[in-house]
Length: 296
Image (cartoon, rainbow, N blue to C red):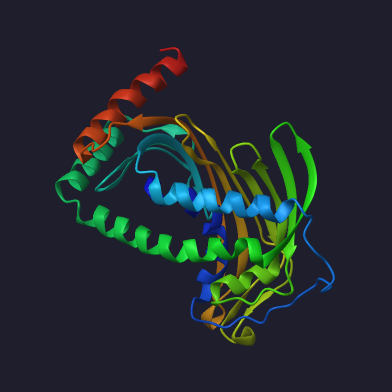
C-alpha cells in the first residue's frame, strides 16, 4: 500500500477524500480571512521547503518496506495486518480481527489467499497502477499547499516547529479538488532540521457544497490527523492516520468516512524482492517478532 506514493497519500489523501464524495462537482467556496492577513515571515519559506522535500522523497525513494498495521474503517471490524511492498504491488496478510488472532484454519485460509494473489498478480498490478495515477493528481494538489494557506509560527521545541494554517483568500484554485482548501484550517508540525512533515491536523471549517448542494455536501467540523516519522535510513513514512468526515451525496445517500490506522515495525525489504520473497518475509519476520513480543 505504501511504496513510493505512500508518504504523499498520507499527507494529502485526507484532502482528496473530501472531494471524492462528488469528484465532478463544483464547490461554493467561503473565505473567512481579511485580505490584510499575511504569513509569518519564516513560516512560508519553511513550508515550501517541507512540501518540496515530501514530493521529492515520494518521487525518488524506491525502497520497499514491510510493516504492521492496525486498521479501523467505517465501523467495520478492526484488523491487524502485515504488509509488504514490492515492485509488483503490495501484499497484505491479516493477523487478527477485532483484536483476536486468527485461528489455525483462518490463518491457513489467509495464507492461501496470499498465495493466490502471488499466482495471479493482475489485481495487485491494477491497484498499483491506480495508486500511481492517484499520485500524479495528489502531487499537483500538494504543490498548491504553500500558496493555498497563510501560515503562522505557534511555537518551537528543539528541531520541531509548530505552524498554524488558514485559507489564503488570495488563492485561486486551479482545479475543483484544491478548492477544498478554502474550507480547511489546522496545525502542522515540521522538523526544521530535516525539513520534513511530522504531523498535520485540521478540520473542515464550513460546509462544502457540491454544485450548490444539488449533488451533495461535506459536513462542517470533519477532522483529520496525519503523523509520520523517520523509520531509519532517512525513510519517513506514515505512523498514524485518523479521518472523521460525513456528508451526503447523490440521492441523499449518507457518506461517512471514519478511518484510523496505526503503522509500526517497519523493516526494509531487499531491493527487487519478488512477491513470493515478500510473502516469505512476512511469515518469517513478523511471526517470529510477534512470538517474541508476547513472550512465547
